[in-house]
Image (cartoon, rainbow, N blue to C red; front, side, top):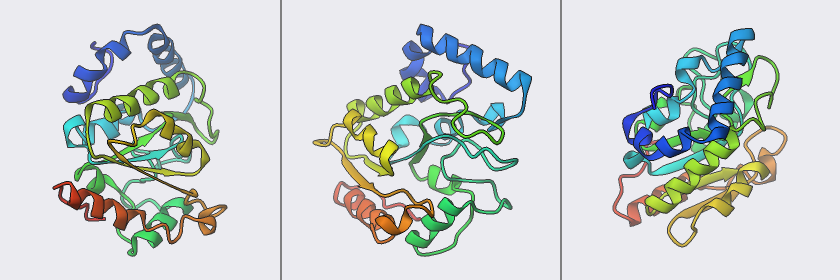
Length: 215
């Protein structure tokens, strides 16, 4: 399908999804939104997570909700902002748990096989969740199921209630699912800090013959 510009290994597996009526309606909604006002991320980066991490390279999945909705922040990778942009509070807390401050741009994780997926891939400026309920969640649920069904020994990091609910889409016999509180300042001290997810993830990858992530 030509209207979706997405990395070819994903395109091959998602082609049937792109042909469904809900996706046509979603595409039209997103086009109208981008034409009528400021939306994020830039259109060419809506599928950035897919383009940075091909299907067969995925080792870890981190789920976010919808993109950051302030100017210059969202670039299609959950929790990440481009180099030079101040780190939002959740990203600051993620880096605290990692144990170093590092770059705000998590593309380096994506290139190592960390699939940084928001469950909603676009948003109107300054209006959180403004593109939710329009079809993105149906699409990203299909993506999560695809990874669960066609890959083995992935690590899914589910932070916060909405992400935790996605565990029902994942075969926990085949994959490691790690849940905790969300890294936002409202909840980080209720179980995100000290969850050791980054260490546990790397131990699991090593046990299954995979290169650990350099967080």
